Length: 261
Image (cartoon, rainbow, N blue to C red; front, side, top):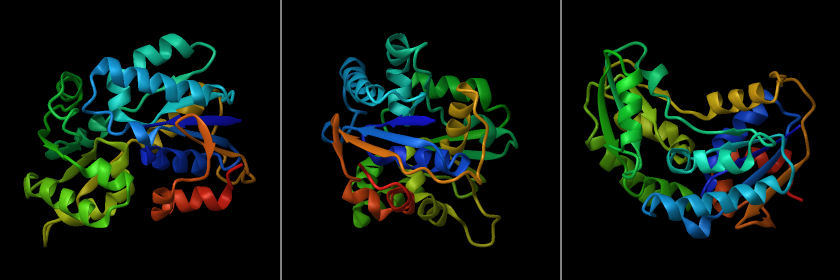
């Protein structure tokens, strides 16, 4: 079994790690194009062309499924990706975890890139799935880029700026960009108020990994023998794991179990 994941950069690490937790025996193809980052400020047409190029590079390695591990690409390019690649290659998009986050009502914040925050797509998800929850959309300019380059100071500044826009009584927080899941605990610490219950974080990595397995008729097998197949593609070229990826446990774990080849 081989699962491919695509993103502009290292935001795919969280979903890749989730795939490996569910199926340690899955070979992985990680396809990104960090030189084209960020995708958010690009026009939808331009961003779609970059997403198609990254997806084609992954598809050339004949995976069983392709995870679009990027919220922005899922918003703007998912239809084009499916039109080109399906049904031969199942394509699984990433959706912000608004529905499970809002299930209990209360105050919910959605942290997302500026291009996703307030977008018709996110507003539609809020309308359809927020129920009685009180939603605050929080733009996080610069956070994805800071995570991409493992810039500790920039990560701290971006998280602090977003936390300042987050109501203090928030009970649940949606991580609306896959990059944010790599610094989830730093985000939780920034919004946690003394004396209040721990803020619940909702990312998409686990759900999208499980959906990819369902699409290909596979089931979770956490005790399976670990695979050794890992292909890393940067701009379509076979590469090693990016240095910045090794700053995060997800990247180090993948590199340790599956040396690039």
